[in-house]
Length: 206
Image 1: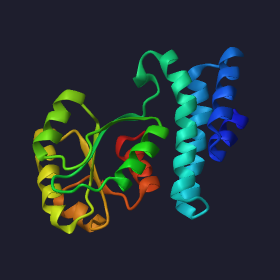
Image 2: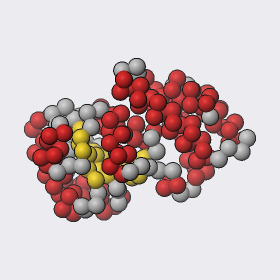
Image 3: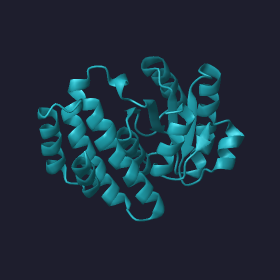
Image 4: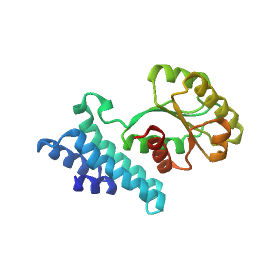
């Protein structure tokens, strides 16, 4: 497990895959490989990103290595919920086409054991509502980079709170803040990808 963990942090996809395969051949349980090797590694990556020891490109490389290992164990699990920390629907709100920050959050959430349904960019309140019905998430993440799309974010959060009050919401993006999250009734605000993972875990008690 230690070697898998170190290889994920180093971003060595091929080594991660060969170590995961060897572990499976040696009879290590798939859920153990995920929790003690792959996800534990991304927890370390997330904390290093927060402290400034690792930067976005390194985090993305580590996430790719983690996904390489996950691709080998995921089919053996059968029921995804046996390891998923929760199901998250995420998207950039209507009128906004920015997705770099959102894409990083998606990768980090997936790397931390969440099942993520990414709706993409310019997602209307109606499309978020449809996704609630179709995917039954426990959490919805909304991203915005333009000040002009904050109103769309507010509208969507209010619609989710009315339609599915049991679903938690979190927001992120340059123009928003914890104060704005409080004002519109969102469950929380995350300033970056690592913080988004922490917030998702906190909101879902994962």
